[in-house]
Length: 488
Ligand code: NAD
Image (cartoon, rainbow, N blue to C red; front, side, top):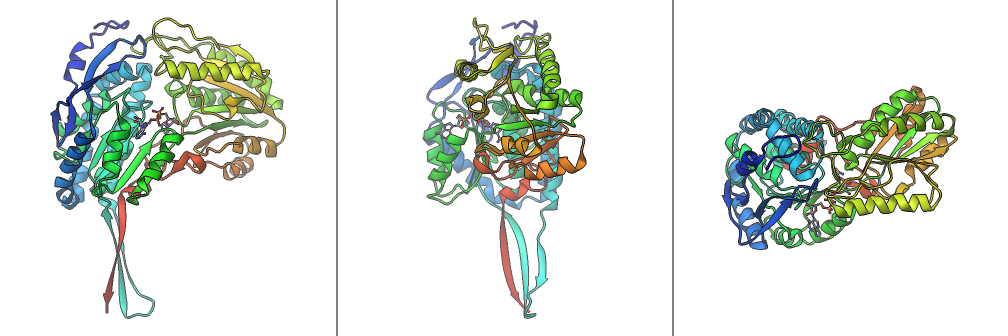
C-alpha cells in the first residue's frame, strides 16, 4: 500500500501486533474488527476483538505479577521506564507514521505527539525514585506517626482516539513508576499505536503481565468485566464527559479509585491590551494543534471589541493558509477528521451558528469525496446562544465573539459547565493574574497557546473531570497512603 507521500507502509503495518496483548504475549481472539484510514476509509488491518473473558484473562495476568512489580526496586522500575523512553524516541518515525495512518493527523503533528507521549516515561522514570513518606512524633509524645505510600494495585485505563499514544503514556508512566500494573483499552478507531507500544515496551524490558492491551469493538462489555471484578483497584479514563459519568457510576459499586480526564470547552480570551500578533500565533496553536481534535483546543474566541477586527483579519489570513490533505503527504498541513460522524457534528454546529446570525469568514464547507475532511474555518459575529460556544466542536473551527469589559471577558469564559483549559492574552501582569485566578479551569495558558507538559499537572474541574496527569501530582493518582502507628 503506497500513500500519496510515496511511502510504502506495508512493512510497518506487518510489524504491528494485531492480536490482543495479554501477559506480554500476542493472543488471537475469536473475532476481529477492521482499523480504517480516515483519509480514504481503506482497511489498514484487522485486529483481534477482545471479549469480557479476554478482559478477565488480562486481569489474571496483571494480578499474577502485581506483588512482584510493586516489590521491584523503584530505581529498577525507573530504569525500565527510561529505556522505554529511549526505545520510543529511536522508533519515533515509525510510531508517528502508524499514528497518522490510523488517526489521520498530519505526520508533523504525530511526531509532536510521540515526543510529548515519550516524555511521560522519562519524567516518571525520574519520579519513581521520589515517592516519599514521613516520620513524625505524635503530639502527645507517646507515639510515632509513620506515613508511607503503596501502589494502588491493578489499574484499568480507557483512552480516546485523538492522541493514540500520549493519552495512554500519561497513565502508564505514573502507574508503572508507582508499581501498579495496567490494562489499557485503546479506542476502537486507533488501537495500532498502543499495540506497537506494548511490543516495544516488552523489548525494552517491561516484565510480562505488567501491561496488557485490549482492542475491542465492545468497550462496554470489556469494561464491565474489569470494573465489576473485585481485584481491580483503579479506573483511569480519558474521553467524553458522558461516558466518564457513566463509568464513575459503574465504579461506585466496588468504590474504585477513579481519574477522569473528560471533555473541554476552552475559551481563548484576548484583551484590549494584548499583543495581537502573539495572540494570533497562540490562537493557531491552541485551535489547530491536532487538527482541532484536542480536549484542550480553543473552542471559542472571546475578543475585546477594541482589537476584534484586527485579530479577526489576521486569524482569517492564517487559517486560509492551511492545506487539507492526507496526513502522510508532507505538503498537507491539515489532515482528515476521525470519521463521518465527526464531520457531521462540525457541519451541524457551523450551520447552527450561521442560522443564528454568524458569518463564515473562511472555510465552512466540507469538500466531500473519500475521507473525512473539513477545512480550517473562522466564524465571526457568533451570537451568545450559538451551540458552538457551548459544545465541544472537536474540529478546525474558530468562532469569534466580542466583549467590552474585563468582567464580561471573564464571565464569557466561565459560561460553561466544562473547566479544562483556558487561554488568556494580555500584556498586563496584574490582569493576567486576576483573570487566571478568576477563570474556572484546571489549566490556564497566559500568552501561550500550548500548555501540555509532562512536568505539569494536567486535568480539569467542573464537568471536565478530576485527577491530574503529569507533574509531581500525577503519580499520586496511583498511590495509596498508609499510616503506621508506633508506640514510643
Ligand atoms: P468517547 O468517550 O466516545 O471514547 C473514549 C473511550 O471510551 C474509547 O476508548 C471508547 O471505546 C470508550 N468507551 C466508549 N463507550 C464506553 C463504555 N460504555 N464503557 C467503557 N468505555 C467506553 O470519546 P472520544 O470521542 O473517543 O474522545 C473524544 C473526547 O475525549 C472529547 O470529549 C475530548 O475532550 C475528550 N478528551 C479529553 C482529554 C482530557 O485529558 N481531558 C484528552 C483527550 C480527549
